[in-house]
Length: 105
Image 1 (tube, one colour):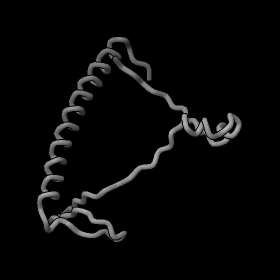
Image 2: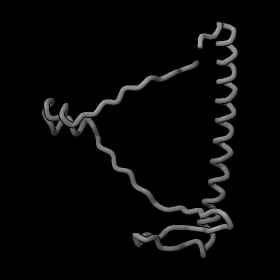
Image 3: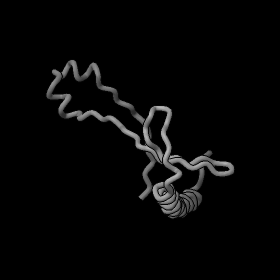
Image 4: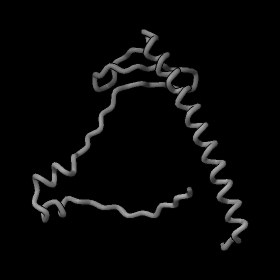
């Protein structure tokens, strides 16, 4: 499908408007989530123990379960790995993903 320049301008305006709406929606969600977290933290009966034995905060409602628990993420410092490995070894463990990106300013 090929569109005209006028239609492109219209699509760009719509994208910009939707991105503003998305941003406002994400802010509203973040505010509501912080209120849920506050409830879980301030309500003693929400404290429970997970299957792994970790302390978590949890509340079960009529049609939902809200859980607030610690989570970890492991990362690797690429520059430090390069210092430890020679270039050939580094290339063996390196993984590069390519993808297309649309940017509108």
